[in-house]
Length: 116
Length: 116
Image (cartoon, rainbow over all chains, first blue to last red; front, side, top):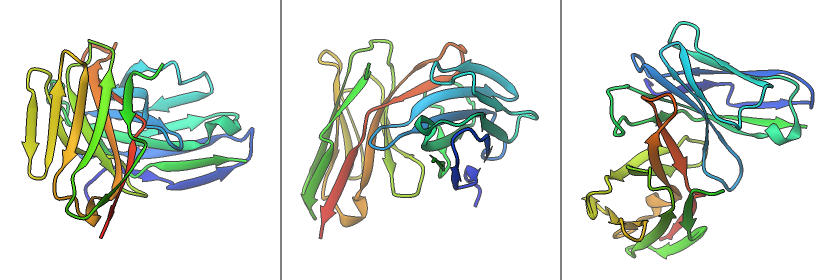
């Protein structure tokens, strides 16, 4: 399977714990996006990488959230001191970065986080 | 503030019928309008997209109608099949503050059920 992969698929944690998610984009895609999807809502943009550079962060991304893409390939999203409101599906997407608004974003299956 | 409003929230259609999902937007900076299809346990997948200078785009059984003056667009699924049962999201794209990225803003989604 050469699509976007995410690990883990499910994560249950206790409030106050730190969690880290991994995203492996489609090979040679230089753009990588993180979105958050809560029940009954569409995905909401969190942050974006062009290669290893993080170029935009949403106001939804509080100081407890940090994302990295150290070598311009895989990316990690860490949430520190988790809160129950962080419970959501975290989606990763990648795109070829060919330019233009038709640069299709391909989504992974997501990581479902439950904070108890 | 919800920038893309989608309706209905859920839709039940008989096999062979027409499914219609509507979306409206306010932000005139949006300049590309994709529709995504999401099956349970999967990430959203691009279905079809339209530019605002086009009033209609058809791909197989899927058609987007676009009304720029009304800031509305809709997805029509002709000859709906049980395999079309999924959640459908309308979305809109605008250039992000990174300058080269294109942010997706999603509607809340429509759960389509096609009965056999």
